[in-house]
Image (tube, rainbow over all chains, first blue to last red):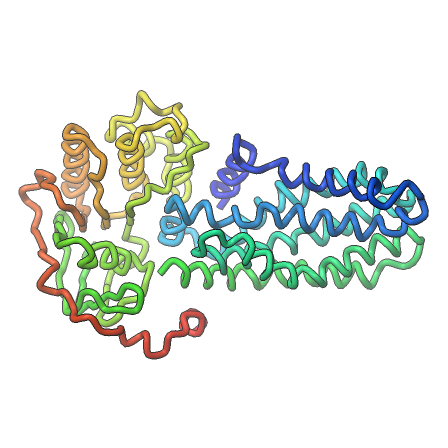
Length: 218
Length: 213
């Protein structure tokens, strides 16, 4: 399992691995929104939680189809399916690797971008916390979507259509945590719901994704 | 580890392509599958490997005894030869010494630090076959293993297969060319060709329902 994690991380960081693409996209969103909305601090501060969460979500979506499609094309997925490693474990590991190179990296970058969007100072810890708790759900749900579309050529758009509706609850509660945090209100309920989505999907979706891959490999 | 195929029928895209096959592959034996294009060699190997369910009949061999090599080599072009092979060795729980032996056996020592992207088609194929050696599994299922190999590499590969058989392994090989494995049995697949008709499974064609069941 560790070997798979290390391989996926190596592949992500080497040339053509796509690490940095999502981060650059996240950065562009955060730079472009103030240019489009105008310099008025009040409006920016109000929309900052939503923009940051939407940006993180779209950046995450960019690299989803790489999770299984590349392994499918070069035949590794067949070999992984016949390897001693349970496919469910392989799915969980690949989703974890995806989270490390997108979700975690976005979380670390987010406070810098929050400055550009004029997020109130007390919202920063909540932004980081909500992203740490919420982005794993994005990777796991995305891995499930990628598993469903693995045999489909140019399945990227179909994958987005499948996955984006499933991201809605994560987005709502994630942005709500930041908004309440920035206003100094209690954040317990949306944070608990966000954590529930992450743990629930991390517990169940690897099994669904592995079943989908087995069907797609036939 | 004995591989027993009994009354097996395999289907591709919902159509049964081969049926009524029964054979046994004992330790130390190699069986060469021959047949015209599209007869179902790949489908048969994928079914035996457990990647797709049989349309009828049984494959009885523990899944952890089977190692499958498809047309695609499963290599990552951004990783070096050693890294590619070390990954599969780690997945199968084998150590560094087996890796070195596999590199040696397929004549890849000189290329070990080369990225897979920079290998020729034949060198990639050799690396793909070296992977079989780091699976540590007794029954090899090889689909056209000699594609893009030159005469010398085919000889190298035949030696590796002989070594595997001598160590108590067995191999099921789909190939068109003569590997020089004189001791191997040959199974012609054309007589088992099925008439074109939908497989039984197509009657209730809901793969997700089957997967859950």
